[in-house]
Image (tube, rainbow, N blue to C red; front, side, top):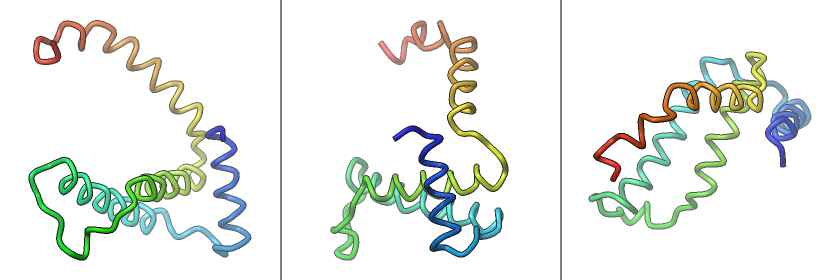
Length: 108
């Protein structure tokens, strides 16, 4: 699925099933919450923390999709084409970082 198509599907779902978008501020808070849920799983699976009994069942892909969903809601609400934004971000990184990481001794 293309990013633009995904944004359109999110928008269609919101209007058909979700009634309307939550406010941008509410969606920002939800995005922060979803990132926190992903962070908790990553800290336990790949970091030094251990799982609590209630955290042992998780779906890493679903948590990432939750983040993408809310990000697409925010993009739709604020008129951002995420595909275009990502292309522009690649261009920015290509100009800014084309030698930076290759010359970083910490990455060798």
